Length: 186
Image 1 (tube, rainbow, N blue to C red):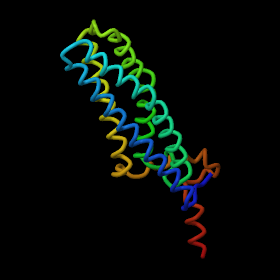
Image 2 (image 1 turned 60 degrees about the vertical axis):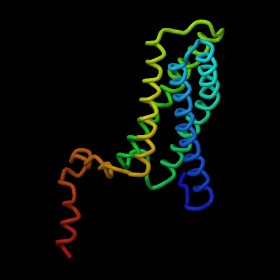
Image 3 (image 1 turned 180 degrees about the vertical axis):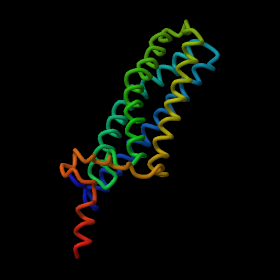
Image 4 (image 1 turned 30 degrees about the horizontal axis):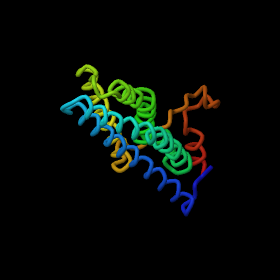
């Protein structure tokens, strides 16, 4: 299905940008809360911060990440960019797939685990566990920023189609020789 320029295409692109920027913002918020929990002066304060991070991420990351992927696929398949016509689109698709899986299956459950571990406000999980989540969220946020930059910079150019061999061509002749023969006969 081709998205023709007009209101429908603008609506899908707008929804994609809103979901993508929202996902980036929520990740930044979760990272900020988890980092503040790491630096908190007590278990009760850390527990409140981790609980806020888990609520924010648990409610919004699945919705925003899946919306960004779905609308991104519609934009890619419905416009001249295509999924595998340009390197930047293919790279963004790969990064986004890793981010969706990592965010929804690893990072947000780990954040919820910290919230659960500090629920009573009396015990903090090991510092290494809390620090590793801050580092993982920082990496994820960096990759989200990189995916966003790919959309605006559009580096690397087009993916060249694979050349067909003589056997695949079916003619047995070098590609373009029929055209050259036709031009020569004119």
